[in-house]
Length: 419
Image 1 (cartoon, rainbow, N blue to C red):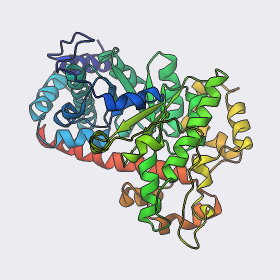
Image 2: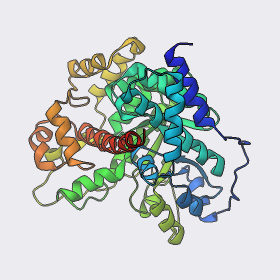
Image 3: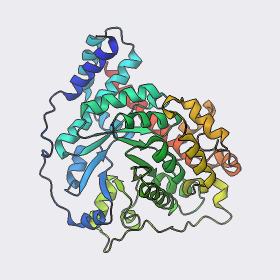
Image 4: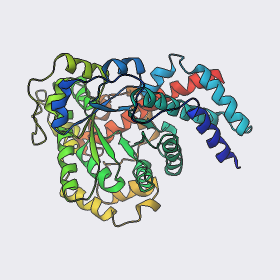
């Protein structure tokens, strides 16, 4: 057995250690919450956006079907020290399998084990589907994303979805995983055109709009009150996916992610999936809407500050899918996408006139985004947004990816401190 297979076998065994689950039979007693029925009837599936088992247990009901974790949420659990013993045990098992493994690879493997092991605990308790996310170091590597995505799925094909970040490499990796029959949650999306391209090029089970971060960008940078930016992008994306599904060009579903207020449950009813942070779900259970009706046809108004226009921050990239962009994607579908590199994907969109869609970020750009954390500082990007050099959706995607990478680094640092 070569090193890679030996490592994978050791990681599989330690991840699955003690996992005995009869699918369809959760460990906890699942209650009914009738207030969610109207939301489900409007066409929305309900997920919780947490990896905290105690918090999820207080909210979980029969109307919920999945939990989604990410690098940030998993890091919160790891920093509690819950899995310190598992870290040392996994390190020992992997070193036994591959004595020459270097520290960086060992840390990546242990992070993989932690994500898978924690996901399985969620499956056991709730019998839920669980989204498990690739390590951010893999975000620009097609082959390794596919390899680790397959390994995640093999650990629990009955319940795991594999989260792949929307990057140039991610477009190809998500497609390859889907072709291998692996359900992909294509994460870190912010716009209708990203969702449109993802649905056709990568064909994932799910794509996302991180609405809360969009609203926070506008409010936090004093460009407006922040209301409805994310909602407008989410509803526009849902309409695009519905049109594609109507003509059987995709089966991709939309996740309304990064929800911030319980009022969004009613204002976005009919979006395929809500992944709700616990505080949003709890507040809705305390203050449910009196009436729920599908909102997909709505186009909410956006109020910006005096003197601010959507063009100032290239906001149209969030909810418009121009005909030229549709044609660009249609031509891409004629190519052998599975053989393309991440650079090929970026070059293709740039040559087609959409360099703003997948910009070639400099190291300085990356450092700036990482320093900004979750929400970009508008003044640092203002000129490039206004000129159309970069899309608002692309900037938010960059910022989100590196905010998750920062939390992944914190998780990795805890692993390193214990091995």
